[in-house]
Amino acid sequence: MLAAWADFVRTVDPDVVTGYNIQDFDIWYLLSRAQRLGLERFAFLGRLRNVRSVASKYANLNGRVQVDVLQIVKRDHKLRSYKLNAVAEHFLNEKKDDVKFTEIAGLQHGTDADRARLAQYCMQDSRLVFRLHSKLMIVLSNVQLARAAGVTMNDALMRGQQVRVFAAILRKCREQCLVVPACVSDDEIEEYPGAHVIEPRIGFYNEPVATLDFTSLYP
Image (cartoon, rainbow, N blue to C red):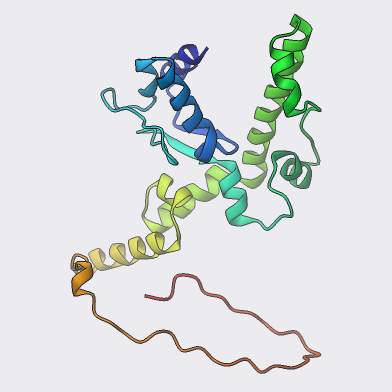
């Protein structure tokens, strides 16, 4: 099954690989399991023929963009729960099929009808993730973000604000024929005073109080 899935990925040759919690679990688990079973060709999941994908917290599928919907939802939305069932209900008014984790092994080793139920459960999970993509316009919004900041799609998805800000600064510097010096080593870092913190005026306010929080403005 694992070998067939890897062959399917190489045959279809997708630009984007997506799922829910694939960054911290699914891809890592598949690579680790395939290694344990001695499936040497499995690790070549990217577009570079001689480069393996290594089982780690972030397994790089060279040439393919990984879109972990869980990480995007956590980054962009504040919800009580980030389980797929809760997120799907919040944005789509839909739910996962009613199959408990403890039932999966029994269904897999059960009758044809049991396996069909399990397959339907897996397909519903995939449909929900795909519909979340469309609802939240994840690919479109992050493509535009990558273009605006001048970073790769993977950087727009996986890295923080500072990378985007610095990339945008570098682009402007290049337009003005300016060269930004390379980063100095840790031993040569110049010390500077910290940010100025204004003491709050404690008390009751009967008018709205605005909160302005600008990220990544500290050096």
